[in-house]
Image 1 (cartoon, rainbow, N blue to C red):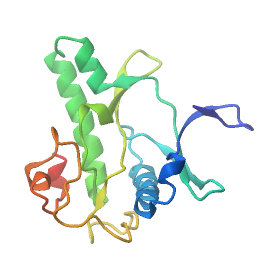
Image 2: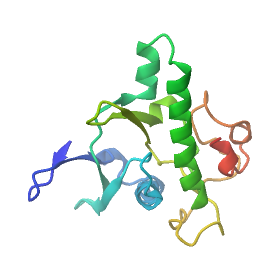
Image 3: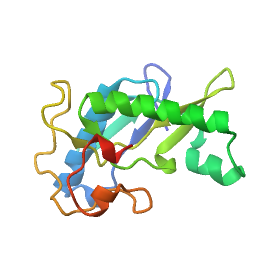
Image 4: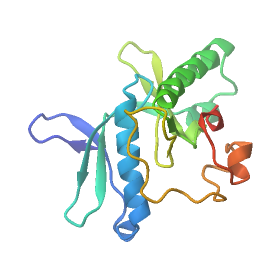
Amino acid sequence: SVEHRKLGVDFIAKVPREEFASNRQLMERIRLEAQSAARIEHPNVVQVNHLGYLADGRPYLIMDPLSGHTLETEMQTRERLPLVEALGYGLQLASALAAAHALGIVHRDIKPDNLFLHHELDGSKTLKVLDFGVVRILPGVSSDAPIPLAVPTDTGIVVGTPRYVSPEAALGKRVDHRADI
């Protein structure tokens, strides 16, 4: 958590550790993560407000603060989610993914740890999609899409969390929006 000095408002900062500063592809992925989340502009996607660079060249993201916990934590603390609640989260996720896919953004790592249940002031919970660190930009889908990685992930490289990765991604094939679904 960081505080904006002039506004007195808290935000969340995401900064890579110093030992990763020389990893150009990782630094470029952080740029792409920031641009992806910022361009989606959807109530179920964490809002990235700023992308900056430290003196040593490491990028950092400034995001809206969230109150709550991940869907993973929720599922660990409760025996099961009631059907209506689970469907509500599913609909919020589907809406966020539809907005991302309309821009040609494929998340590639949808899992309960990357889904945050933000506690609203009225006591309700809003699902927020986090961590756009391994996105893939589909060419030709939208002129509003972020600039893809200069050096994209090689075909044959598996990207995502093994337990949640799509069958196509697990085989190292290029994926499209269907991998998120």
